[in-house]
Image 1 (cartoon, one colour):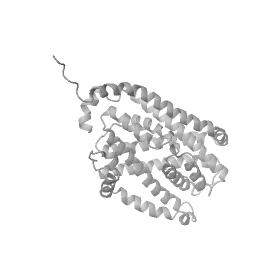
Image 2 (cartoon, helix red, strand yellow):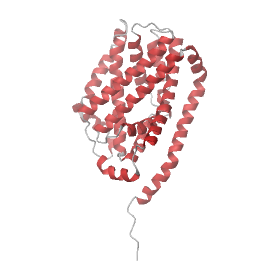
Image 3 (cartoon, helix red, strand yellow):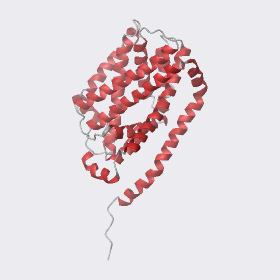
Image 4 (cartoon, one colour):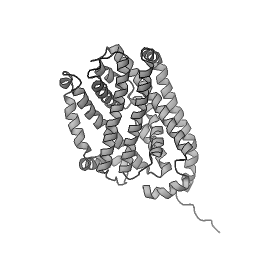
Amino acid sequence: MNSPAAPPGAPRARRWPRLRRYLRPFALAVVAVFATLYLIDEWDEISAGLGRLDLGAVGAAFALVLLGLAFTTMTWRAALGGLGSPLSVITASRIFLLGELGKYVPGGVWPVVAQSVLSRDHGVRRTRAILAGMVRWVVSVVMGVVVAMVTLAFSSPEALHAYWWLTILAAGGVVSLVPAVFNWWFPAALTLVRRGDSIEPISARAMLEACLWTTAMWLAFGLHLWFLARSLGAPAEGLLLLTTGGYALAWVVGFVIVVLPAGAGAREAALVLVLATALSREDALVLALVSRFLMLLADGTSAGLAVMVARLGGWGHTVAQVRAQAPRNG
């Protein structure tokens, strides 16, 4: 008597958990290698810069970077929920912050890839997780340009003339985020990612939440740079506007340069260029390098905290719960 045939994909389904058990430590090891190489290459300048800064200012800046990462996590969570897969804050934090470590590997796409893989454990379709990551990227870039335009334009009388072109980019970006417009062009631009699956339109509420969380993120990151700049003696007048707009603009530049890990080099160059209006180029470079170091430290810290809280608190789904929720989450 012949045994019943195994359903298609069954061997692959059995292999996947076993393969994933080895892939995750390997992926974390790759991230650690690239992050370590960056630190080795820049450590002399970073340590010299830290030696010039007040310890309290560095601590405040680090806390604000952690806060900014929490805000950007909420942006991703809002996007994913708006696409039809709501997750708890703890679960979303674990997925997003662990996945974000992939930005230290050259290529630019690894955070989204990692988040899509981690999301599968919680019944989220991989395509939807990828789309949520792309929505976050789009919102971060557009709101980064908007924040840079508003803050830099008012940071000094000369800045309005120097950054007038940001007004055009910001206006076009804001229009592109209007849900009726976004839900038209975004699916059309992602036909290759869609692979035949339908793309749910994102709700106006989810888009508004994502924009607000992203704006809060830029303010937190700008304030962390303000503490560092004040520690180096930068004049207070207009400084918060300059650091907020400068960081947002530098991040957008670094994002465009996707070949480098997390925009390494390009972001610092753009930040030095903007901050040089209030600081010497040497001091501006110190701020850029220390800021990068604090970001790397905060990325690792926040990811570790998210995993620890999820495990200690018992958050997360069992395999049975994942299978039960998979149809509901799409």
